[in-house]
Length: 260
Image (cartoon, rainbow, N blue to C red; front, side):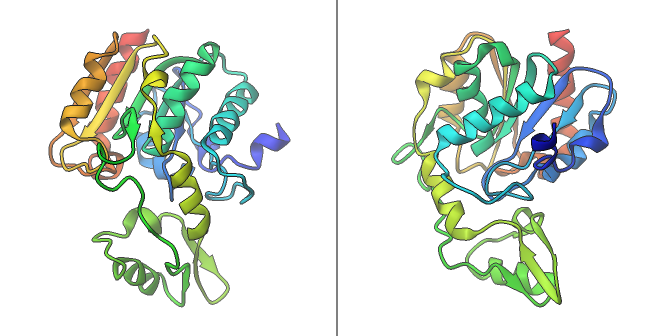
């Protein structure tokens, strides 16, 4: 378990009754982004949220091929010793989740996929990669770092700033922008065969203002996979767990209750 402890962020605070839910964050994220969801699910699930390679406090070592993220997550679940888990993934983490379920059916009992589909490429997705090369990683104050990120065309830097921590006399992001380019590039592809390659129950969450999961693709996604259901959040963007944490937790809790 020593290797495991090195890359678990918020997990140990949320050991609750119920099934084990492993939550995988997206690019630029960290395990702690699920803190609010974990609290809302107290009594319904034990939420375990690791930092993935290149993110948070996980060692920032490559390579950053998507196959490596899948292998990491599979090893993490085995190390937990919790039997087949409910696997929740946001964005990149969602792709990892359903690809892992297709390859390791013994590790996953159900899937929850937040705002990502079975295709991550043009023309289906207008902007599958956010070009972050050369973006600022540190600043004297938290506010200045946030403003520097917004100046790059990001309306709300809140998601990125969840990975900002004090470093000496200033603030620094826990990830490297150049590595994040490699992370994003590794997830580009057509993953329909993986999405359809698992038969476990699946819940798909879509933000009404999402740019990474078009409405038509989301509907096709659940129509083509038996046992899949779509829940939409009309007022949310890509980060539904931040925009509507209570509603997300309610949908997840209902889904978990159905699994028994």
